[in-house]
Image 1 (cartoon, rainbow, N blue to C red):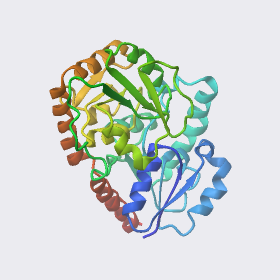
Image 2 (tube, rainbow, N blue to C red; image 1 turned 90 degrees about the vertical axis):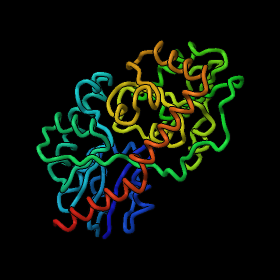
Image 3 (cartoon, one colour; image 1 turned 90 degrees about the horizontal axis):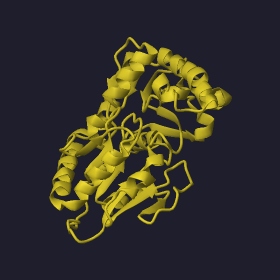
Image 4 (cartoon, rainbow, N blue to C red; image 1 turned 120 degrees about the horizontal axis):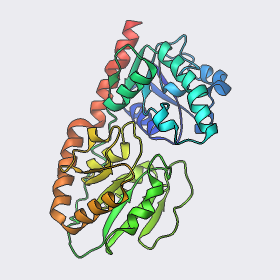
Length: 333
């Protein structure tokens, strides 16, 4: 079976599809600029050419509408940001692009797709409601390589040393990056925040003595990044899944994240970390300070998260579920 996946580079979805390509024979990535991905009709001819000879196309709904009409296909909703509650935070040009141009493409993709997948129950529910999707949406959680993302072999439980809080993601408002400085201002003195610049942003946040930019970290170096820290901070506004959260969980970190969208499906409040109100700067800082003060809850929550990641978010589990979905669609056609 030849499966072709046209997908824009520089996103969590691209990482997930690359993982599928590494594990499934015949699965081929066709990467292109994420900017082109915002305007799929401009590259419709290239998209059609790149899937020639495919038995199945696996892509995103954002530009799936430009290429799915004559080929068995699966679209995966890795997120859903086309409804009013999230679009209201865009500027007028972005909102117009999302609600009219891109939403039209997504609706076409939904109509043409042989099967629809979402990466969380939340994403499946909100997409189905907003797009009036009548057919069932299969939920396949994103998987991470739990043999690569492992806890640090050395203990980081000393009460005297500096506590390192990590943020992983693009420095966008959707990821809550605009709150990082204010949260870090409320940290206790021995806590330091290290943040990535993400795959699509090259800027840094305003200088602050207890904050450090780690820059753009390659995927293969991310396990060491997580192992260098004690806690993951993730004050996001909307997530389709939360790949960095699952990666941090597999590395045995407690997580302090927003109580929104898909994140309660990953983080069990007060067991694997804490879920805070969106934009709750004081609450985020208090939970970080609490975990920084006493090593045992950090260790226990990290162990809990590792066990949950091994049970629910492994690469093998994801691959097995996608392989069956691919086979079902091809056999059905």
